Length: 119
Image (cartoon, rainbow, N blue to C red):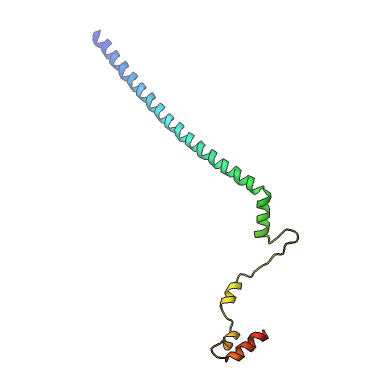
């Protein structure tokens, strides 16, 4: 009888210990998951705040005016828009083929002045 009682007690103790360790493991895993979710929530709230600020800026008059000026080449009434071709500065620095013949090295100074005044 004592052996049977001892065997039942040991079996019950082992099963109880297993159950307790399993429960503690589950609690630990869930607490880690809760911390992960909290950090994700904080990150998403921060992103949401940034998006709200961005939306408020894009709804503002300043943003609309800037986009109209830069992308649509529009201006306020009375303003004049100057559109410069994309290769304008390249043409300023590189002489064209016809201009190569009239370089200052080939012409006398009086002819250079005459050409300059005729332009």
